[in-house]
Image (cartoon, rainbow, N blue to C red; front, side, top):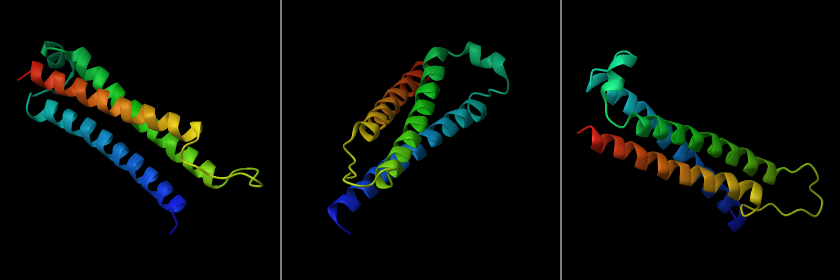
Length: 122
């Protein structure tokens, strides 16, 4: 496997890992709210402090998943372009880098917001 192939594999793996982590964080926070705090319907969640942080964190994690999927689609498009003649695939093109940056930043932001929510409700 040459360096270009490895770059594509590593970029795709990073995106897949962040997609998995984002969905796992959402699932764990929902489980935490239901099992530990006794949240069964919408009423008790209003009694929690910092619910804006919770909703914003979930939204940011969902944005991370969506950006990750866009990045994976961009990688696929780079590997098999419509007009292959004279075109070199790269993971550094804007159609790949843009969604990747959004994915990473929204994951970090979402994680920070959910940690803030947890600290407020300890």
